[in-house]
Amino acid sequence: MDKLKVLISNKQKSVKIPSGIRLLIRRCCHAVLQMENFSGSAEVSVSFISNDEIRLLNAQYRNKDSATDVLSFPLGENGTYDKNENTGAFMLGDIVISAERAFEQAELYGHTIQREIAFLTVHSMLHLLGYDHEQGGLQARQMREKEEIVLERLGVSRVESYVVQK
Image (tube, rainbow, N blue to C red; front, side, top):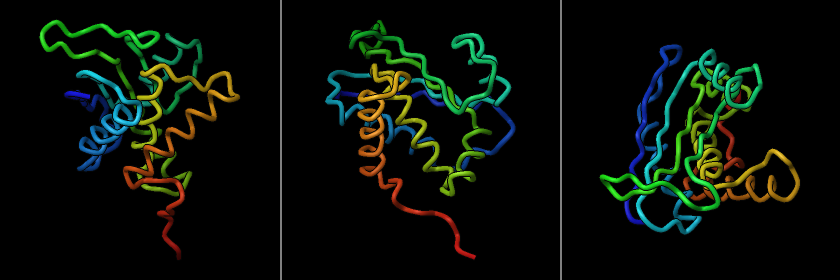
């Protein structure tokens, strides 16, 4: 992989995004592309939005009238991506994360918000590269294994517990 440009925006005001999250997102995107031996330069957009906004997008694009944690909007198909005319980079697509849902899930699963956002980013990057888990089976298992490999390489693996003992 040559260069990676990750455009990150916070379009919600419900929760405060901790410092260091932008760097973590960039590291996640880079790690996925590196694991997948992606060649060339790439661009990805990551946005934090509200539960209400992600619910609207989920209804519009997936016919599911409910909030979800993350949505991926790939710009490529079968390993073919449009190129940015100005930079020559492949435009992989857009990732939208419900910041509210990410915080809720971090608490529910007993880990840090950093681990949750890292997981959602890695998961979505794999979707942008053509992986799918919707049908279950082998594809879902392969995707899950790849997620854990990347998270472990980044030091945010699932085996570590962040639950504070009382």
